[in-house]
Every structure is written in structure tokens, then in C-alpha cells.
Length: 337
Ligand SMILES: [Zn+2]
Image 1 (cartoon, rainbow, N blue to C red):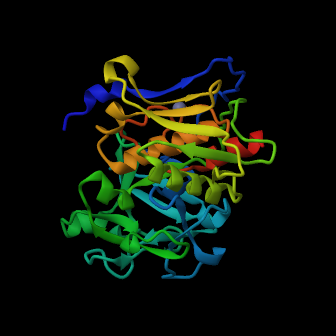
Image 2 (image 1 turned 30 degrees about the vertical axis):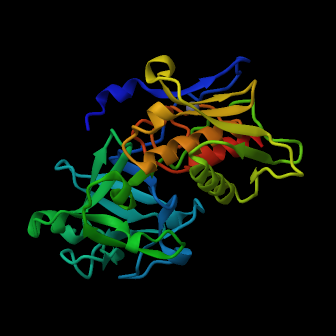
């Protein structure tokens, strides 16, 4: 399916009252691209969780897993990229510990570990990786050098079994095709510095809730996205409205033609309404992309403005992206609230 024309589509935010949001000028978020010589966090897109040294203590051969964001050294990785495009990825806990497929570089479900190398060592290809970025999707794959060069295998890192819970192993596995399947193999690189965006018009009530009512065909996705925000922000903000709670936001569908909307969705701060344009939503390439759009619009309901950074859920233009809530998105929320 040729999708290039969809690039003109974007989530249109109707701002009836002009916002006085601030945009920091320096851009640090990496999105699909790893730094060439700097620290970063590496987020698994599907779970929204980070490559982590469990308990923040290193030992040779220790298994590396995904955990919820804690922004400590256990989740910070120093990437150094060689001239051939391959990178070493070292733990900020101790730079002598490298991400490595110590046990096997040719077997499905071989576990990602950290391996000790003394300073000055020649680093073997099992501990060298390539970030294979896909700017169109806003993500990167992570491919091991030994797997690729010595075994000619097309395997990439993923969360074991597609699981999303804290403590899930990271493993090397055959690369999938198809966005809905492959997104367990999508990673986003985040800066260790935050770039925040802000919008002052939100739909959160005085009790700190955003109670929603939906007549949309995408209501299941709204439920999932609301839960993702609540989990990530560690509080129950989004609630489905009930007989005893008045709605703060109404979520509806519109069947206007693509040519008239030129948009996938729209959040209107005056009518406090999120509108999904079914003509655009239904031709997005995958459910995970629709989920990106739904989660993005709920971010507007919290008062978050568009972000310029790939890898953030508030990045505008979700025609292909499948990302999840980032450290920048959370920091933007925390700045406001
Ligand atoms: Zn938007």
C-alpha cells in the first residue's frame, strides 16, 4: 500500500484561544536515531519500558530486561558508533559492561546480557550492535553484528514473547514484517535531557480527572490509551464517565471526506471534543498506528501541546508512527501539573 500521500495528513489541533506555550530551542530527543557518542535511554515501543540493568548492579553475563522508567544509571546507556555504523552500548552503571549476546548470536530467544571487557580490549562482534532506524515509523531496530555478519541472519532485539511486564527479558529473534506484529521489535532512543512542550488548555476537572464519554468506533482504543496515560503518570486521571460523573471530554467520529478534513483527528478546546475522522483513521496502515493517534489526542486533553520530537507521543503527524508515551511527554505533563 502506497502511503506517501498520507504524509500531508496530520493531527490538527484546533486552537481557538491562542496558546502561549514555550518551545525550548535545543532539540535533544533522538527518536529513531542513536547518538554517535553520548548517553541515552532506550525504550521498547510496545511496552513503553526501558532497557535496564536490574537493580542497578552489574555482573558479567547478567541478563538485561525491560523495566518502567526510573531515569537512573541503570537505564542510561552510552552509545559509541564506529565509522562502519556499528555501535557499542555500555552501561552508565559501569562503562566496562557492554550489551552483549554472550550466550548465542544465532539462536532465537538468546538473551541480551551485559558482558565485562577491560578497558582497551578488542570488543567482539557479539557485543556490537547496529541501530537500523526507520524514520518513516519513527523507530529503530537493534541488530547484533555477529548475528548479521557471521551468521547472515536477520534477527533483532525484542521483548521476550511480546510480554510487556517489568522484568521481561530482551532477546534476539527473527525480524518480523508487518507493523502490528513487528512493533514488539521497535525501539525509540531518548535523550537524557528533557525537551518539554506545553499547552495551557486542558480538559481536566477540578477534581483532577478527565472523565470521558465516547460514541466513537475506536472506544476500545480510547480505553487502552486512557489506561496507558494513567499507568505512565501513576494516577487515575482518565475515567470513563458514569451516571454520577459529568463528562469532561466527548469523543466522537466524523465521516467527513479526507479532502475536506486533511486530518486524522482533531481536539477542540472550545467544544471539549475529540473527533476522529474515520476516512483517515481507517486507512492508516495498522491498529498500532491508530493507537498512536488516539493516545496523542488524549495527551491534548491533558493540556499537552504538539511536540517537535520524534519518539514522543505528542509528535504531530501520526500517519505512520507507532510510539508510546516518552520521558518528554511525562516531563511535559509534570511541568504543567
Ligand atoms: Zn496533535
